[in-house]
Image (spheres, one colour):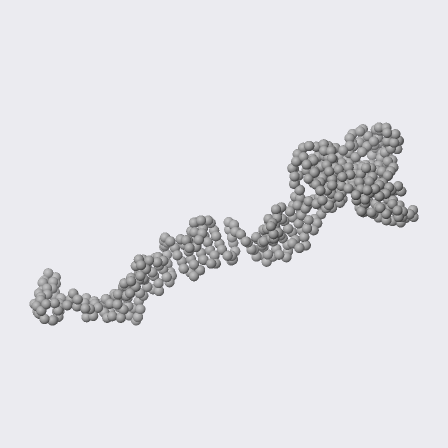
Length: 542
């Protein structure tokens, strides 16, 4: 009997005029039910995708219908999937990770789905880590494989058994209960290093055919999914014992069934699950990665604090995420023209390029540092420009502490021994000397004029007080007063002294009316006794 239920599991109708009601189940994989019924505009109206079917004490969703007219009438062909397929909609877009026993991990996976965990025969602890988009049904399959068990679905409850079925001693033998047999050997898939071997067999269900089940009598012919059975077919040279990994039967007439037996339990998803997990879907996340029409390839960290984007329009971006606002900021941007933008430091053992453009350069730390920027200039030995022992401003002013020139030459328009205070400054082809108060005290200017005059100028607190000069034309040496005054003392090339421009202080002859002068020349002494104002001439005596 097939019962039609609504979404609240309330009975709507019982279908009696049904043909080919086949249930198929594969270990840890598909679980479906197909049937055909007559369209009678009564009960058949309930056969639609909004309802489900109850058969053999289990629930199946109606997922596909096909209406057709034949010479025998109008029919509706129906495909149903076990309600466990609802778990395909319970998505884990960022993957899933958990550690513990199956019961606890499965409860987490099924949380909020309406499904519960039933019998669990395996109590070991395992860790599951799926780093791509998945769903709750696929996770249950993954958990069964991880814990080494087999799932059994009972409506909205799932159990994990050590194994389904048993070895009941059932035999499938040609001319007894073996109707058809097909052997498949697939060397592309290995099982313990050997080709995968499977058999598709049609068998007569003798326990039903001979009335054992109806009479309530135990039968050696009974089998179910997961059982180990022995197959004999002398003509095909078959004599193998393998497990039933898939089983199909007619729920109304248990006279003949179809089983698949093999040395393997398929660990591939059924068709619907396999499509979802082996295809790359738009904007779905796989190990933190997705591909979409807007951004292209995107790899996002699980905490949304960083992501990488790559596409053919913008290039490559590595971005920082603000989890509070949900915004992203470029940390590294490489455009399709080959330009790169970095918001942080660039660390490299070697950088090669025809030009490097940027806001600043900082190599090293503390006093062992080299720095340059577009605001201060270039400096060494300190993180701050103002305290650096060597620095060059953007205006070209270079300052160095403890500079030692080992060899070569220094060429420049302005060189000084200190920034302020007592210092020597060389500039404009002259040398200036300053006292501790920063006042100019002496200057040696450059040679000027047609005669290339050479001078030393003396200052007092910045005011010129006199000079010593010489001209290339005469070889005379002159001592002058402040700027603009006449020559005070002149020594000629012949050695004569001329005091014509000097005052007579210390040399005045207007001292006493009567006086004498003594002049020592060599070892000879000469004395005069003239009085009154007069002059003296001293001649060399050989």
